[in-house]
Length: 336
Image (cartoon, rainbow, N blue to C red):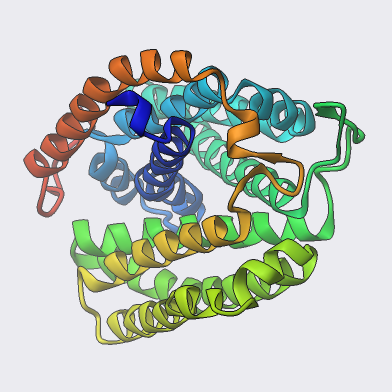
């Protein structure tokens, strides 16, 4: 049966799925951290953290799965990408550690709570910016010669990667605001509506700017979007983005509770689909394809046997956790 499967493509889909779930689930965690400076009341900040306390740690499982899977299954792509993006990836990891420590210490040290609140906000912002810079650098292309990275230390820092970082940061902040709309009520929900009203059009503008710039970065991207008859297959993506954008703006304006969050998540899913359209069939744009980057089929098959049940278990407990902690976060709920 394994012989009939395109194992390299299947593994690429698994890793893409893990990274997508990370952006959907940990994105609003990071967003809530970035919104801390805009909510002054200590009790409201505590409620913000309480809304994510049962799930935030598990959300990062998907980042581990994506990074670990890339190392094990696509070692060539891993070596090239990590060599090109050491700086933003190290910034991201340090920010996540800083953020995790701040999350725990905030509950235990009331006298230093303001310090840890700032640390949580800075860690969340640092992780979001670093992820955006890494994404932008990957999209704009990584120079490769002889199966190795051929660029410089600062190649990841460009106007395009900065724009991508801004867009992703706005998106995560919007995820956080719409999550609070769905999970809270009263003054905190009112504040979340106010923040979402400002963040939604800014995020949509960033999506448009990054999308237009991306198409002109690389002839392969333009061909993947506009060549005939491929354009017929990919045309629904921008149309669905427009529909999701309208649902987002309308949901916030009408003060609906669930549709703003669902529309924001739909925009992330569609943005990820757009990346897939642009990248395919490359793991490293214009340099290394999925099949060139993949480990031998025997290794892919062996790893799949172990990863398949693990993936089912992680999905299962993720769904269960969100189901158990569904509904509004109580006002008097404090952390764990």
